[in-house]
Length: 287
Image 1 (cartoon, rainbow, N blue to C red):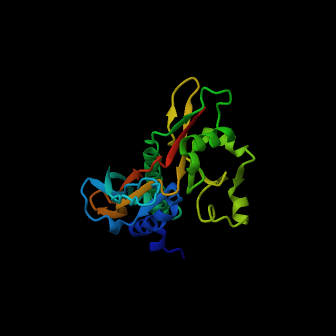
Image 2: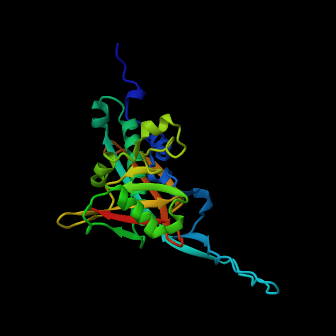
Image 3: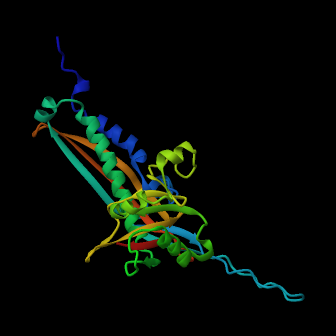
């Protein structure tokens, strides 16, 4: 005798639990060394703008000569502001659909909401990183696609003697990824995991490129042309700040007139490219 049991039905509370539990695990770029996450309870209520406080850099060391005292310099602070963004998704399932469904729709909805919310936050980080003014454009050179020489030139030209300090992440467009996967300097994730590299184990990165955890994003800017060009992002550790005003919230309601269950989810946060001299992000423009 076959019984219709609760576990086989669409239970909104299950979707809520799955989505909120999986959200942190689905974050990709946000979980990389390039991003400094700030706990939601450290933010407080700050309206439509979020403060990102920072220390201004001190000047270089002074020369000292006998009888000449050092001149004290004040350590000063500043604060940057970033707007709060909000994104959400709603799903409505009628009783007709849930009673006829095979499998567990509630778990599927929860998993997809977590994935979409994480992708939304990661995309915002990509767009913020692209505001950097440090750009290396090789589209006018003989070898115009992403390559080892252009990568090294970019970090040395823009970061100088700080080029190899605080390695964060490399984010590329799928078109640029083609050249990287064929590059002998690329180390696949399974190879780095075997070596227990601390820069890759635990991250959802594809592997390492010259020590940089490699991520791919379709949100990398595509500059329309003949042909198109793409802006890869080279990031220092802690280049981006991420503050949640409220992390993923999933709510459910019952529409008794329509005989359906409604699930609505939203996330509210702010992202910011941290100040640095030079800035901690470079755009490498290639074909």
